[in-house]
Image (cartoon, rainbow, N blue to C red; front, side, top):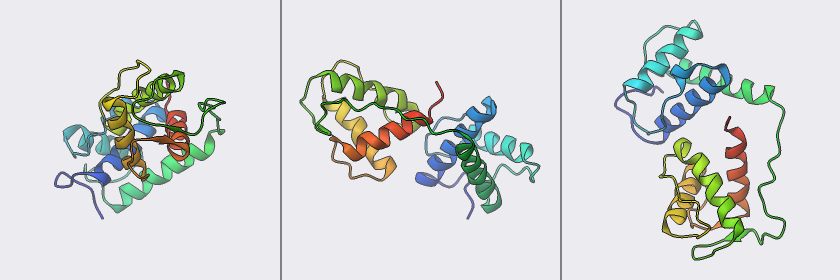
Length: 171
């Protein structure tokens, strides 16, 4: 398996997320590429920089060796960090927010979605406390990306995935 300029979609987005994660953790801005799902020149340069850093052949192509090394580096970095619990769930939450709702929990949902927008490739949502079309679209996009049913509702599983993703951000 290799990931290169002809590829599009999920594998490219996964590659870009791993590069960003390592770039943030190692303080290497050149690895912090946008998550677009397209293997563009910035992604190729980031792959080259990673390969050079890891003393690998510098090709700019994410072959199996590069992919495995990058995945291992991400895994090691995650294991080296102490787990942090983010209690973003409202105490009185019924574990489900749906389109049309308006309350404080929606503000929280929108805040977390906005913080994750760049990482997960959806448009930033307004933080207005109203679960409208933009919030629903962002929830669906996030759910699809993390492998949850894209129903547009912020249910228990979605909240937990949002908390995990939010915790992984270094702000």
